[in-house]
Image (tube, rainbow, N blue to C red; front, side, top):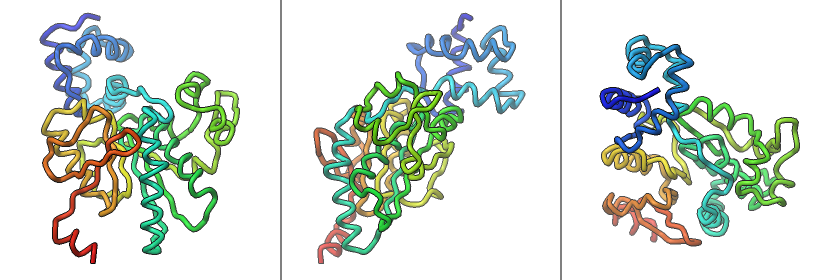
Length: 285
């Protein structure tokens, strides 16, 4: 199914409104490759018909299929390695120490744009290694994604041999997975730490509450400049005072002004919300 210039304008506008993903003309191949099967399955002879069905017939199931097809679900366990080393050796131990001193035993983590769940499960495994079965800690990890299909898969916690070979060390697999007919399933005590929900990051999320750690990696690169800026400022609003933000390796936040304080740990950049000077003085008294 060939995509005309006029159809590209319509489809790219529709994709942006549904997901916030910005597609320029260089991505026309992506629309053809991912949405042509969706269009054919819906009985459309061209992309104009797909646009009409999604925009004017209010087919919610078809909207879901478009979003599922166009959003990237490329992920793996412990992706990029160094952010997870920073979590294990610096960020989480530091937070645990600070919270212990305050007798605050709750730790909340959000994996935004979690795709099929490998990132939040990787974080859960790190936490298990650090605190084990300690009942002193109330740990909750939220994984969110715009794709219903991705969230369904993440909730199942079942991964193929190929997915397990990508980033999962054999000793971790033995400790945290069990063999099942479909592949490998995350063990119950790890799955119990993580919950999943569908969420469009362009929409309000303050109702989620506050988080000690937010991982929002490799998603804002698909947004326009204004939406990217707005997203990170809204994330700042849900970070605790001592919280940490992990962005993607190519998503430097230095252009956002003094709102985020960059730190370099374990070969990865992490950010903390920059507090007003008066607040900082008060915290050191």
